Structure formats: structure tokens, C-alpha cells
Length: 132
Image (cartoon, rainbow, N blue to C red; front, side):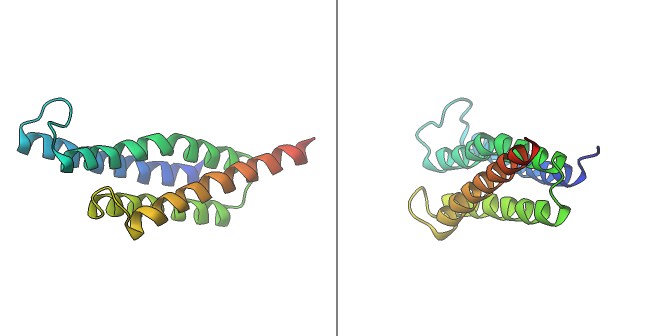
């Protein structure tokens, strides 16, 4: 069974991961910081934006893949995937512009990320319960 919808959002997530990693590398080179953050708060934030995506992407994409394999309609998968990508963009923008403090984008990015993860987990639990 081809996992086309999950493949789409995994690919978009992969591109976002590379874009955020490139941002970290660019900052490291411009500031001549090879390891660590050198006390540079901009580099700390860029690293956290990238790391937070890396921390959340595996579970979100695994849950999406399992939901797709369980037969969840493509429409719902696209809804979850779209919210996932928007959430991660909001988080990246919000954490950066808010300089680590409160920001609309950071708040909604985290909240929507959790909504996607929780909703997909529940979808998969329902699929499991229906299989009994």
C-alpha cells in the first residue's frame, strides 16, 4: 500500500528540517562558532527551532503513516498534514520573532502540533478498538 499522503507531508517536513538546519549552519559560519552556541542567543534560538521540529516530527509522521495504513480517508490525512506544516511554520516564526518569549506563532505552533499528535493518536486507538 503506497503511503502517498504521508509521503507528501514527510517530504515537506524533510525540506523544512533542511531549511532550518541550513539557517543554523549559516549562523554558525557567520559567527565562527563550530560547536555549542558561543553565548549567541540568535544561534540558541535557531538551534531550538530546528531541534523542536526534530523532536516532534517522528511521532507525528509515524502516527500519520499508521492512520493512513489503517484506512483514514485522504481528506482527513490532508487536514492533519496541513495543520502539521502550518503549526511547524508558526512555531519556527514565533520562537524566532519572540526571541524565546511569548509569541502568537510559538503558542499556536505548539498547540496545533499537540492537537495533531493527540488527534492522530486517538484515530489510531479507535482503529485498534474497531479491529477487536
